[in-house]
Amino acid sequence: MIEVPPPYRSFASDNVAGAHPAVLEAVIAANEGSAAAYGDDPYTAECEARFEALFGRPVTVRLTFNGTGANVMAFAAMLGALRGPVHAVVCTEWSHAHMDEAGAPERILGAKLIDLPSADARLRPEDLDAVASLRSGPHHAPPGIVTITQPTELGTLYVPDEIAALCARAHELGLLVHLDGARIANAVAALGGDASALRAQTSEAGVDVMSFGGTKNGALGAEAVVVFTPELATGIDHVRKQVTQLASKTRFLAAQFNALLDDDRWIALGGHANRMAARLHELTHDIPGVRLDGPPQVNSLFPCLAPHMIEPLREWSFHWEWDSSRGQVRWMTAWDTTDDDLERFAAGVRAAAMALPHDDPA
Ligand SMILES: Cc1ncc(COP(=O)(O)O)c(C=O)c1O
Image 1 (cartoon, helix red, strand yellow):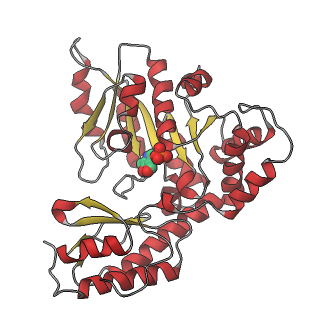
Image 2 (cartoon, helix red, strand yellow):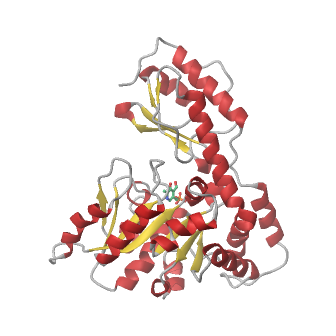
Image 3 (spheres, helix red, strand yellow):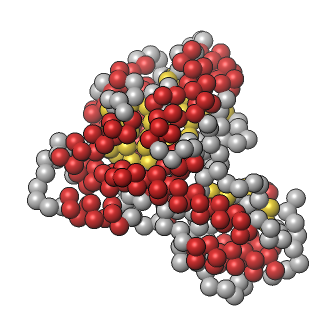
């Protein structure tokens, strides 16, 4: 039993957080009167203009309800443009598309996912060489797309030059590049904190299409597919409908992004979540029974805990086990995490550690 009060907010994920008040206000404001359906409305036009200003160049933006839908829609647009036999999507073994989408890309698109091993959830240019040889012969699904996640599912980051090198190699091999940016705000906040940091790791690095996250950043539920390579936008409206992501009341998705993109709020919120994770690291890294690597790069920590701590702590304030063979769990901060939440959570970790003589995780 942990005798200290649990934090108000959960550290289970960043999508357990509510919506930012500015997003709610924008949705309420967009509720005024009627607006054309299916994206032909002023809120969506404003949203598209905001994305173009952010990237400083023409882009095609289509809004979706969720991140799985954004990824599936992005792959569908890219696979459609490849126009060959069934193409495969190369990813890491940690990728959300592979681990956490219930096989949606395979089921909806008929595409095979090739999940490459990666200790830090990142791909390197040389990883692509191994799959390039799979292109020949009628027995194999030829790779057509590489998808990377920024920041990754393990809280690691690519620097822009690494993405550029990966894109260059992929393009040499005839592969298109997708970037899953469900938490792109956290990556941008960590790598410069402005629009140029966004461009450097996406459009200027050679990414063809990205999924741009809003939900974890403070939206009620809104994501965007941003297409940088114009040929891949051909037919995108049909693709979005076919993968069931066309919202009749698109204005409400657009209003959410308009609030997030206004005055770089999205970057400020991502930066706040990152700082909260750094502070949580400071508060917990030297507690006996907690083994943490260096400070986090973005908004997640993956501590290994002494065995006696894990269940009491998870019962007291739920969070996910990550690798039970190592006693590893995930703690994640969000745009709304407060100092008080951190203090309470750290007090619980300390109490769990002291419940029995500590057993340092191997
Ligand atoms: C890396 C990544 N991509 C995409 C998503 C989007 O998932 P959802 O379909 O739940 O919005 C998530 C959510 O956890 C994620 O972590």
